[in-house]
Amino acid sequence: MAMGLEGCRSAPSRRRTRRSANGRGEGAHHGDGTAVRDGDADREASATHREAVPAEKAGVDDVLAAIDLGTNNCRLLVARPDGAGFRVIDAFSRIVRLGQGLDGSGRLGEDAIRRTLDALAVCAGKMRRRRVTRFRAVATEACRRAGNGAEFLARAAAETGLTLEIITPEEEAALALAGCRPLFDPRIPGALVFDIGGGSTEIAWQRDGPDGRLVAALTMPIGVVTLAERHGGDRFAPGIFEAMVDEVAERLGGFEARHGIAAEAAAGAVQLLGTSGTVTTLAGMHLALPRYRRDRVDGVFLDVARTLALGRDLAGMSFDERAAQPCIGRERADLVVAGCAILEAICRAWPVARLRVADRGVREGILFGLMTQRS
Image (tube, rainbow, N blue to C red; front, side, top):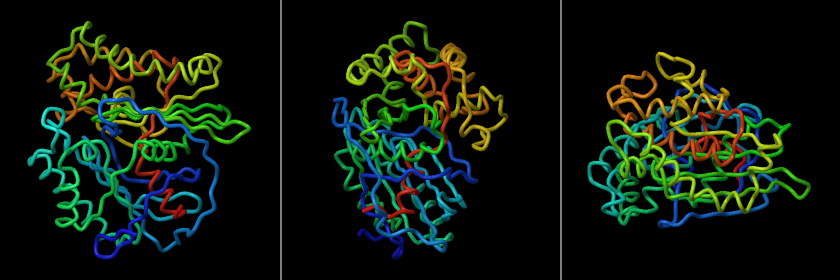
């Protein structure tokens, strides 16, 4: 078992995470999530997941922490076990843009590394002050692709005391699915969860059936950073926005052909959940929030047609006009349109009337795993 942060236990890699009760708690966390890829190829994985027997459960005195380091964000949750769920006692999120310029150079840049190490140092400080007893810190897209990814992780361990592990696309999909599962409507057998990341996008499909829970995951090498770098600008003409949508749609066709999700969606047997800064930002705008509030956004339902129209409105705005929106700001103004294009492609492929927003995902999935200590 890996150790870090002055002897706190960090959890080993786990492939299954137990379904649990709603783990909602305080602590704002907001930002584009991340997904992972294998070179430039889409990856799909399928498995039938059944419950496993816990090896060792967290006790009431344990303090748990989860770190998700992605292409765009570094995010932390600290929580205590609370029945079948957990209560969040601290949280942290910072845009670090670790993957900035990675597509061109194949390496993490020094400025991006420094920003990320500063954020990880904040996470480590919060974990020490909260006396964390169990933690898991994962790294995804940027560290997987970068030629100096392992060197960066070694440097992070030396400078912050945090041991991070790079997780597979399959595990990231499973963690995001587990983190969002408390928001699923049990009356609807199919659940499609998407995470629009900085460097890639993940789609996770779950359908309950007589033979267990079938889960299929697709990882695409398209995220808000990569798409914005290729098509970005001040304003996005309708043709450019449509080109971004088409680029994503081409990646979704094979997955749909294999699983036939659209037909089930048309029959009302599919629920759609989005976990990323794109959908939480759009939810904040829909609610006309003067500032982002997780307690108002997490779990809210959005009308898909109105939400896509809002995305196209953002594409027609200038950078400064988007930055002036309270739930966007200058840090996301250059990325949100790319996220809206990815969202539109997903909603065209699998049309449903409404979308549920999840300000949760990988970190919550990690916490559920830490509570049950899956082996």
